[in-house]
Length: 323
Image 1: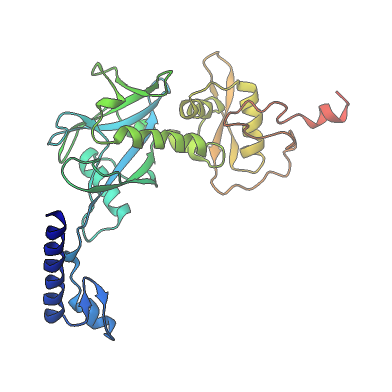
Image 2: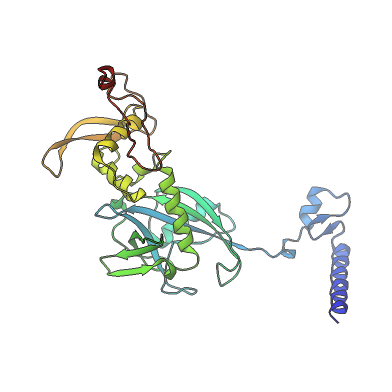
């Protein structure tokens, strides 16, 4: 019985193909069967013969809380599915726009945010990740200084609300999201869709990029005037580990100040302990200062994802004196 049904199905399929061949000679489900020009092929091409997934763009926007903790912008969904759940801002890609354009449009429509650092993170396409239909999501990673993201951002479009949540990591590696102003706390498994997985990928990406990019500077409120402590706060928030101040300064000196990517200004500000500390400016395309010879490069750099760097930035005068 089952074999007979397969034969019937096969016969119907072949009849369908034959019918399309008569209607569109030379084209079988998008395949060329004879010598046909590309112009004619495209004219007769039937994309409806294929099932097509929808594509969305979802955006992670990281920033710092008032206490210097890593925070993430989330929206509360106003429509089904997952109505009332918190999720990443995002939405469907229009037919006439690029992925980057869709990501920036959706971010602005749902949060009012624009002109921030963004890069493509990864593509997520598990079958069943969206209960409506087959949906592939292209996730974007964004960073913004906290002064551009108030603790409460009014939601727009189909987002009921939009606000910042501090990210806390449990011993088992899972995340908890906290907004103290609204007294909201929830676990990652309460997020919509597969957004918990996307967030994990995003956190891992920015932590890894501390080693080889200047990504931490994107979290500074003013990249023209900041202290070494301000930069250390950004590094600690992203990495999730504390950095000893002296080792951090030595590593930053080797990695940024010597190559001219971080320039000391003439201004000084009072630190929390009452001492005056230097202000720095960030220069994306640095020019080394030939007069600065405080530190050599032996052992310098970030080791194993942290700034401890044992032996990093050892002073030349110490080595020259045999100490």
